[in-house]
Image (cartoon, rainbow, N blue to C red; front, side):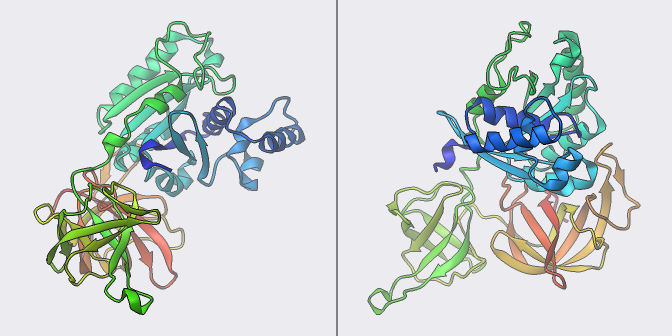
Length: 421
């Protein structure tokens, strides 16, 4: 699968705004469902007493979700068209599942913010938009759903768009699109609606197919965290040494000079290998093995970069984090294991600068702890240096997770800020 043709999409919005139905309609109308999948959903709909096939059940996979009619977990669905392959993440709308929403949107190229045309932009819609911008999602599509329930009113649609535009002006949204639709009936999802002649734009699928996601990737700053050092398994290949990992950003070619961090030694790329053989170029998200012309000290957790374009080497990290553990809280003075790219260390929480009210975006500088699903800005001190970039520059080298060493649970996910103290 070529990553150039792959787009990752996350949905978000208030409970009952129609996120799961929208994805179900997108899969159904794009003919991306197997017959047995549709038959199973139809049978479940009949058991529930529905007089129609509830397409939301295609993504609401957990039994608890089907019983409550809400999305709890992050449901992933895969489909493709002639233009592009897609990974769709149906993320939870309820506030108590904020951590699940953060997980689903963390790798997304675009976010679909679904709102009910009858209710307009709600508190949860604003919260999810704030989270998507915090996570650096470059493309945001406001899906004004259930237009059939407001008589396809252009005035209602325009009022919602104006309201959302005023709110989005306070955030960093590089690309914002508005689409009126009815997910239940299929209007403006895969095909253009005949009920809204006043809308001149195309349907949602056309927007997803034509987004320029490749240009959102960082192709300038070479960042290659080493996942594994490959050494010979037989005597005839004793001189083989390869460094396996994922190209997180930048372009790598044989003959390019590189610097290894943290040692600072420099060398030149001798070859780039994949399971299908050697390649002349490696680009972001390719899994490759890099061989160097010089035998220098490189281990798991080290990073290859350009000699004159290196990430910041830090042990003091300023970051925004989302607390994801229900059994504990974050407080200054606590210690955790920290994983950044392929590198592990330990981190001390030096200070909780403020907590963020994700509904109003106000800062609470008096906060002394972060509990489940809460977001705040913290200062960390690590035991080993990490090779970091600001999250807005590089989402891979600008993010990390915290792990409770006593339980081995991932307790927080963080994004690194530009400020250095």
